[in-house]
Image (cartoon, rainbow, N blue to C red; front, side, top):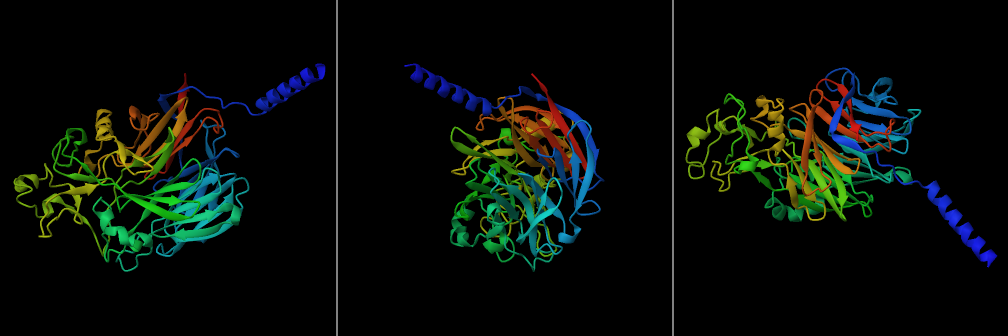
Length: 501
């Protein structure tokens, strides 16, 4: 009996010891309504601060700097209130511009386009402590974004493959999947298998519209998010108005979700389409927005993955092909737009930029419907079905106006122009941070329920925020969450911190 009791005591002791060795995650209660700037660092002006990533092992930020030289600036943020550049990694010998960076397990992955960006690009991996080169991997043309899977086993690049100015050299759009544990072996996949589905996809809002209308060359992957279990990736196809789904186990593109269009002739979606009417006036108009998302991120909620997109919009505007025209410069169908002459005034729809690739539904040379670029919003999509479950409607523009930061000079184009979006856990809440390029601000939303986000606040950034990075409290050098914003036009990095509750 004594031996049995002793055995139970030993088991209980070992169980307690095991529990002690694996402490529960500590929740730092912070108020997401109180994020404010604690540090600012100028890296050199235009294009000097584009995208950042953070390495918790070294407490260093790595920032893309294409200002005067193509390099990565290394920033010590051990004390986030007093940050400084401690090193720069020159990338000039590897090709052209550096487009993106990400870190996992002490390894920095950089996406570098070729000097002739229609040629294959590279991913170069560096050690975050010594800055030594670890590996050079050839990927598709114009790798515009690089990301590690959460488990660190894959590096993925969105190879945008833009054409040259004359549109005579248009490489294949693709996604490269690099197996880190298999000596960085690479599989690059394109969209050829979807050619037979093109007609069906197009009816739902997918766009293939460049010269030749070849889906393999026309698709332009922009940004990637990976599921928490590292089994699935979702890729925005910005110009094509879609999201692609990739099975990372089979390394195959399995679906394309066309995103459809947004009706601006609804009060909650009202826009200001003119920079010449003498004010900021949000009104319903007979116009559609084309979501065309740039950044994408994701979260799992009640067993479903939800995708968050920043619906920036982007037009093709080349010497050899351009889709942009203002409404005043096109012919409007008299039946669809009986007041065409009035609508084409600068103070009404005349100044609005639209695509000429959509809207002439009967192919008679005039426009029966109008489609503009972007949706002036962020959206939430079901990652399994592609269904839209939430859109911020015109709230980003309205809040920017209320705070006095809305730029009416951008009304004729894409409004606040949401470009960046990231998610983070702040206390017990899931928070979205939406970077808006044309109002120099970040919007903060409570997205704990991703089907019903709630606006919290908006805070000022540098000029044209390009990247928004969230550092969770568990990885932060000060054990509090941090938000890092990198701004393209002024080359400034800013760090923000919330108050504890």
